Structure formats: C-alpha cells, structure tokens
Image (cartoon, helix red, strand yellow):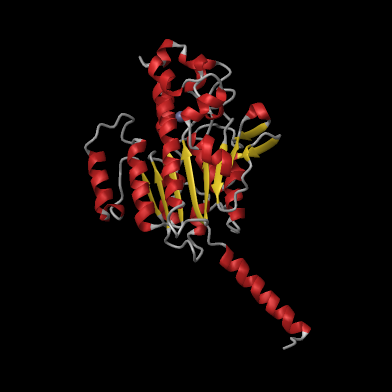
Length: 355
Ligand SMILES: [Zn+2]
C-alpha cells in the first residue's frame, strides 16, 4: 500500500519519539575511590615515595615484590591489572598528563565533599567548601534518573564515608544511600547483607565511626547488584585516602590494587548477566588528587597542595568507544564526567539548586 506523504511523516515522527523514549534504558554504574593519584594509576609504584622510611611502614620489600617493575608499564600492570588489560583494551583511561590528557577538579577546593558533589551533580557550587557541609541543596544525577520510569526505585548508592547521605541528600533524593558503618534496615532484609553488617559491627574501625573499610562496601554492593539488579548504582571507596593520610604507602597501593579487583568483579558480573550484558555503562573516577611535586606531600591534598586538583577517569561498557589510554591533548573537568554518562544514556540531566 502506498502511504500518502503526510501519513509517512506522521509514522516517522511516532517512531522517532518511541526511539527517543525507549533509548534511555542503559544501566549505569559509577565507582569512585577517594584520592587515588593519577601518578600511581599511570606509573605504578613511586620509588621516590617509598624511599622515605616513614612511608614504608616496615613493608618496603613486600611492596616492591608485589608492585615493583622495570618501567611504568610493568609497574602499573601489577598495581591495577584490570585497568591495564581490559579497560585499556575495551574502554578509555584519561588523565595521563605526561601524554597531554588533563583531567582536573573544576571546584577550587580539592577535597572530598566538593569533589563528590562535582562528580554527582555535574557542576560546581562554590558554597560547598567543607566536608561538614549540610545536605546538598543541588540535585544529583542519580536523584534525577530515579524520577525516570526505567530507573524509578532501581537506584542505590553505597559509600564507605559517612558524608554520602548528605552529599546525595538521601532524604530528598528518595533512594537508599548506605554510608560508613551503618547498614540501612531495608538492605539488611537480605540475610547475606545482614551477615556482613553483623561482622562490620563487631570489627575494629581503624578509620573511626564515619568511615568503613572498603571490604564491607565491596561485598555488600556486589550482593545487592547480583540479587536486586539495580538499573543505576553508585559505589564509593575510601581506603586509598585514609591510608594515604596515614602515610602508609604500601597499604595505599594494596587498597588501589583491591579497588582494581572490585572493578573486575563488577565488570565480570555485568558481562555474564543477561540483564546487564551489552547494556551497562561504567564510569570510574576519584574526588581529588594528591601532592607529587613535593614528594612528601603525596599524603595530602587541598588548596595548599599545588597539584592535588589533578585527577583521572576511566569508562568502559555500552556506548564507550575503545580509545584505551588517551594519548592526545585534552582538558576534561570533573563536572563533565556525569554528563558523558548521561549522553550515552540519552538522559537530559541538569542539576538544580533547591533552597
Ligand atoms: Zn583526604
């Protein structure tokens, strides 16, 4: 049958609309680790840090045996083997400044709350100038997608740091934000998560009550991912920052190595589960950098530490071009990252400040 031209246009218009609507059904996973330096991600173990006895914590040879090597390529593959095999082949890794790839905080503070807010709201609010800042007045990406049909009530966040209920404004955002040493009752309905929560409660808290260890966040979030199958999940680790502040370079490296292993666990699951396979976009990044020009400042960050605005990010999965390690000149800001995910997911997100 020959359709008349107006009818054809009508049909085309309808198909376009339904394409646009059915297209934002990408599963989204964002994973961060606090204050992991780009220098270590791209170059591996830094012998200029490890040569200082106070940073060895009695473990210089073990760290060298585990993560040492003849050159940056060899060392980084030992430190973060998943990044430097699968992500380097199938995803993108940005932030190697030696190759011209610059990734930076746009916020002027270079510590955690402003950094996470920049990542999760996709913009900078300079009023957020303290880690003790009140519940975030700016709406975040996960809060927005929790209003879209595909994501509604299928959004969750896990953070090792006790500030995430404020950073994501859990009360307003309307999805579960587990943080620090407190596991929400709704999560504990899962007997395995309850078991992990019980162990957590009975374990010494080396970083205090406001920060749990990464291992707990790792297993709780993996269990949730595998059983509840969220359509969007944010997971935030903190060991790298805590151990760096403690000046413990060998343990900081081990935390980075465990973070890499976690990404692998998520990726392996995503690639075998039919609900996620081929339909999941993963963003991996950090909230701020740390010192490097003055080697002893690697433990620290913030405005007084010159280079601690320098960060990195990686992406892998659905809609991500396999560019590998970026070797061309670019300037990316932390506030751009969530918009890259939004673009792949065909999601129109702009943060709003709610007074
Ligand atoms: Zn810190």
